[in-house]
Image 1 (spheres, rainbow, N blue to C red):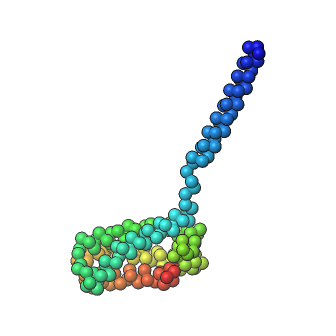
Image 2: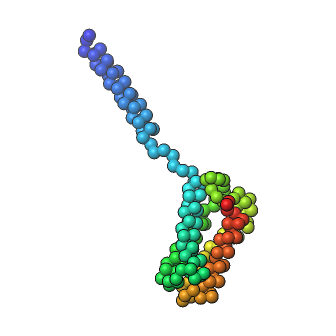
Length: 168
């Protein structure tokens, strides 16, 4: 075999090796990519569940304090009311149109989307009342009548929305 044939063969072999390496790298890159994450709708459901769980956990103490079943602690009341006031901000993006996933993915009734005007009205009232509740707790010094009325009012907001828009 002459020198030019050997060079031609080496060139072809090298080219095939480069092509094979390229295909292997491409295949590896496709399998090495991170799997697709949850959908935006699923993330919205997870976020609203988390926000409502934290709101409920913070609010439960107020019910006990209003009934006299737990001692009133001003620092604890302010901390919990502040948390609620902060957490309601997460509800602005918690119910996008595509997040009506139904059970078991979500405990929200489809009515939250079909009766959107009423749902939005109740959600807005809850958020406003949660912020007012935070102010009431900051101003009241103890389990006063004003405190108890604020607890009852915010509790009614929760109940009203749950009765209409949350699956049991």
